[in-house]
Amino acid sequence: MSRATKRLPMLPAERALKVISGRWKAVILYYLFDGPRRFSALKALMPGITQKVLIEQLREMEEHGLVSRAIFAEVPARVEYSATTLGLSLEPILLALCEWGQHHADALDEKHRLADCIIRPRQTRGFHKLKRAAQAPPRKTIFGRM
Amino acid sequence: MSRATKRLPMLPAERALKVISGRWKAVILYYLFDGPRRFSALKALMPGITQKVLIEQLREMEEHGLVSRAIFAEVPARVEYSATTLGLSLEPILLALCEWGQHHADALDEKHRLADCIIRPRQTRGFHKLKRAAQAPPRKTIFGRM
DNA sequence: TCCGCTGCTCACCAGGAGGTGACCATGTCC
DNA sequence: GGACATGGTCACCTCCTGGTGAGCAGCGGA
Image 1 (cartoon, rainbow over the protein chains, first blue to last red):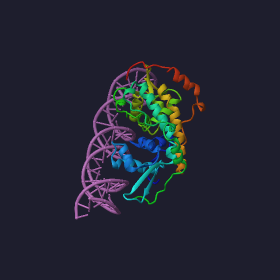
Image 2: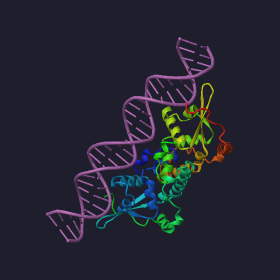
Image 3: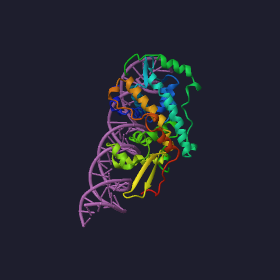
Image 4: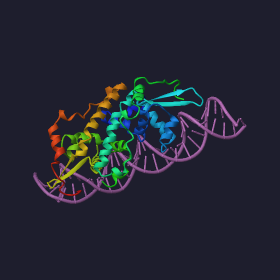
């Protein structure tokens, strides 16, 4: 939490916006809400993103405390990212944003060119898994940064 | 609503984020939640912003349907911006973002360098004025763009 | 020995958002 | 006529974000 948090705006709302609004952060968070995912899995889920950019986004989110990173001394090395409690606390907000986005497209008669809302309330998919992850982050980082 | 909405992301949550997260948009919205403000008043409220940038932000928000612009044939000309219903519907979200921002700063032990949350629940300041504004936008645009 | 997998870094580049400063049109008042 | 206020435009520049492509380290397997 060194440099990155230094530049966060002082106003709470802007701070929150800055933290969430990376090009892929909402999508990454969405996937991590389901439970831990390894790096390659995330990459596969988002065909449009580059490895470098994915790493950047994840690093920032890690610095901001939204996700945590765990390395396993396997071969080949396995790295898993999971949403922290702080990250999980964003779910209602992302959900609200999602609904508002639809409402907005509706109001502007643009609903046709809107993709499905990929962020759904927890209940609809693996709520318990999520709660488990939120209460006891299942794994720890074994080493530092690779 | 021509060009600007064309570039909005297809995912609802990202669309919403893109619409709100301009450098000054949250602050502008906050001030407009209180009721219509003339251009010069907005400028005076935000000493850090340039005229050009303020206009840009307002134009975008207008294209996105968040604010509306009214010109009065007075001398010197008076231009008032007010939040539309769509804009007002963002208040709970901005409020949630504000609270989450504080929570986030708290979790990262950075609460000391956070300004006050300028976005408060309506009840604390002029709720009725707001409702009036939301139901019947009090004034109309007399001319087109100046 | 070479290849493959995993996760990652580095150099470089392009586009866009935001910022700076000058200038403008209208009309009032001194 | 000149100063001033309002709301605005225009040319220009800077910086940050995200994207591209190459290369690297560790280790196993053919």
